View 1 (cartoon, helix red, strand yellow):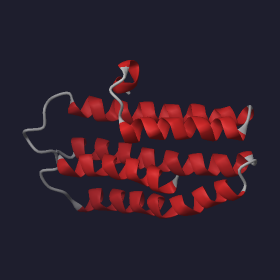
View 2: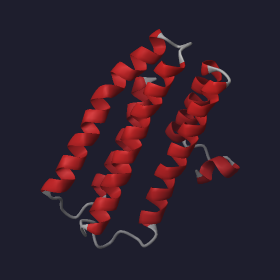
View 3: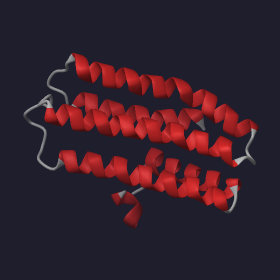
View 4: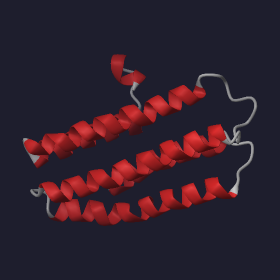
Length: 145
Protein backbone atom coordinates (compact mmCIF):
# COMPACT_ATOMS: atom_id res chain seq x y z
CA UNK A 1 0.00 0.00 0.00
CA UNK A 2 2.78 2.42 0.91
CA UNK A 3 4.64 1.59 -2.31
CA UNK A 4 1.56 2.22 -4.44
CA UNK A 5 0.83 5.53 -2.71
CA UNK A 6 4.40 6.73 -3.04
CA UNK A 7 4.53 5.64 -6.68
CA UNK A 8 1.50 7.75 -7.51
CA UNK A 9 2.95 10.83 -5.83
CA UNK A 10 6.39 10.21 -7.35
CA UNK A 11 4.84 10.25 -10.83
CA UNK A 12 3.08 13.52 -9.96
CA UNK A 13 6.30 15.10 -8.75
CA UNK A 14 8.26 13.87 -11.77
CA UNK A 15 5.61 15.27 -14.10
CA UNK A 16 6.13 18.68 -12.54
CA UNK A 17 9.92 18.46 -12.56
CA UNK A 18 9.95 17.43 -16.23
CA UNK A 19 8.15 20.66 -17.13
CA UNK A 20 10.66 22.96 -15.42
CA UNK A 21 12.92 25.26 -17.39
CA UNK A 22 14.89 25.99 -14.22
CA UNK A 23 14.45 25.96 -10.47
CA UNK A 24 15.19 28.11 -7.48
CA UNK A 25 15.78 27.84 -3.76
CA UNK A 26 12.12 28.30 -2.77
CA UNK A 27 10.96 25.46 -5.02
CA UNK A 28 13.71 23.24 -3.62
CA UNK A 29 12.39 23.89 -0.09
CA UNK A 30 8.84 23.05 -1.18
CA UNK A 31 10.12 19.75 -2.56
CA UNK A 32 12.09 19.08 0.61
CA UNK A 33 8.78 19.49 2.47
CA UNK A 34 7.27 17.03 0.01
CA UNK A 35 10.08 14.57 0.75
CA UNK A 36 9.37 14.97 4.47
CA UNK A 37 5.77 13.92 3.75
CA UNK A 38 7.11 10.97 1.77
CA UNK A 39 9.27 9.92 4.73
CA UNK A 40 6.14 9.78 6.93
CA UNK A 41 4.22 7.47 4.56
CA UNK A 42 5.73 4.14 5.74
CA UNK A 43 4.91 5.09 9.35
CA UNK A 44 1.31 6.12 8.64
CA UNK A 45 0.78 3.03 6.46
CA UNK A 46 2.16 0.70 9.14
CA UNK A 47 0.04 2.39 11.79
CA UNK A 48 -3.06 1.98 9.65
CA UNK A 49 -2.24 -1.67 8.94
CA UNK A 50 -1.62 -2.39 12.61
CA UNK A 51 -4.80 -0.68 13.79
CA UNK A 52 -7.07 -1.18 10.79
CA UNK A 53 -10.27 -1.00 12.84
CA UNK A 54 -9.41 2.39 14.33
CA UNK A 55 -10.62 5.53 12.60
CA UNK A 56 -7.77 7.58 14.02
CA UNK A 57 -5.17 5.39 12.28
CA UNK A 58 -7.00 5.65 8.97
CA UNK A 59 -7.43 9.41 9.33
CA UNK A 60 -3.72 9.80 10.06
CA UNK A 61 -2.96 7.85 6.88
CA UNK A 62 -5.35 10.10 4.95
CA UNK A 63 -3.74 13.21 6.51
CA UNK A 64 -0.40 12.01 5.14
CA UNK A 65 -1.94 11.67 1.67
CA UNK A 66 -3.50 15.12 2.07
CA UNK A 67 -0.12 16.59 3.03
CA UNK A 68 1.53 15.11 -0.07
CA UNK A 69 -1.26 16.35 -2.34
CA UNK A 70 -1.21 19.83 -0.79
CA UNK A 71 2.55 20.08 -1.26
CA UNK A 72 2.32 18.95 -4.89
CA UNK A 73 -0.39 21.54 -5.46
CA UNK A 74 1.66 24.26 -3.71
CA UNK A 75 4.70 23.29 -5.76
CA UNK A 76 2.75 23.56 -9.00
CA UNK A 77 1.21 26.91 -8.07
CA UNK A 78 4.58 28.27 -7.03
CA UNK A 79 6.45 27.18 -10.14
CA UNK A 80 3.76 28.66 -12.37
CA UNK A 81 3.74 32.00 -10.49
CA UNK A 82 7.54 32.15 -10.40
CA UNK A 83 7.76 31.55 -14.16
CA UNK A 84 9.81 28.38 -13.86
CA UNK A 85 7.98 26.40 -16.58
CA UNK A 86 9.54 25.66 -19.96
CA UNK A 87 8.20 27.94 -22.67
CA UNK A 88 6.94 25.03 -24.79
CA UNK A 89 4.54 23.72 -22.14
CA UNK A 90 1.11 23.77 -23.83
CA UNK A 91 -1.62 26.09 -22.60
CA UNK A 92 -4.07 24.29 -20.36
CA UNK A 93 -1.44 22.05 -18.80
CA UNK A 94 -1.66 23.98 -15.55
CA UNK A 95 -5.41 23.57 -15.30
CA UNK A 96 -5.11 19.86 -16.12
CA UNK A 97 -2.50 19.26 -13.42
CA UNK A 98 -4.39 21.28 -10.81
CA UNK A 99 -7.65 19.48 -11.61
CA UNK A 100 -5.99 16.10 -11.36
CA UNK A 101 -4.53 16.90 -7.93
CA UNK A 102 -7.77 18.39 -6.61
CA UNK A 103 -9.97 15.56 -7.89
CA UNK A 104 -7.63 12.96 -6.41
CA UNK A 105 -7.63 14.73 -3.06
CA UNK A 106 -11.43 15.01 -3.12
CA UNK A 107 -11.71 11.27 -3.80
CA UNK A 108 -9.29 10.49 -0.98
CA UNK A 109 -11.39 12.71 1.31
CA UNK A 110 -14.53 10.77 0.33
CA UNK A 111 -12.64 7.60 1.19
CA UNK A 112 -11.65 9.02 4.56
CA UNK A 113 -15.25 10.06 5.27
CA UNK A 114 -16.39 6.51 4.64
CA UNK A 115 -14.71 5.56 7.91
CA UNK A 116 -17.89 6.86 9.57
CA UNK A 117 -19.55 3.74 8.14
CA UNK A 118 -16.59 1.36 8.27
CA UNK A 119 -12.82 1.62 8.17
CA UNK A 120 -12.82 -1.38 5.84
CA UNK A 121 -15.08 0.44 3.37
CA UNK A 122 -12.94 3.53 3.72
CA UNK A 123 -9.71 1.70 3.05
CA UNK A 124 -11.26 -0.25 0.17
CA UNK A 125 -12.36 2.98 -1.50
CA UNK A 126 -8.93 4.56 -1.03
CA UNK A 127 -7.30 1.49 -2.59
CA UNK A 128 -9.67 1.72 -5.57
CA UNK A 129 -8.79 5.40 -6.01
CA UNK A 130 -5.10 4.55 -5.90
CA UNK A 131 -5.51 1.72 -8.39
CA UNK A 132 -7.34 4.09 -10.72
CA UNK A 133 -4.46 6.58 -10.60
CA UNK A 134 -1.77 3.89 -10.83
CA UNK A 135 -3.28 1.94 -13.72
CA UNK A 136 -4.99 4.91 -15.43
CA UNK A 137 -7.65 2.84 -17.24
CA UNK A 138 -9.13 4.16 -20.45
CA UNK A 139 -12.68 3.47 -19.26
CA UNK A 140 -15.33 6.16 -19.77
CA UNK A 141 -15.44 8.61 -16.88
CA UNK A 142 -12.47 7.00 -15.10
CA UNK A 143 -10.14 8.16 -17.89
CA UNK A 144 -11.06 11.80 -17.18
CA UNK A 145 -10.09 11.86 -13.48
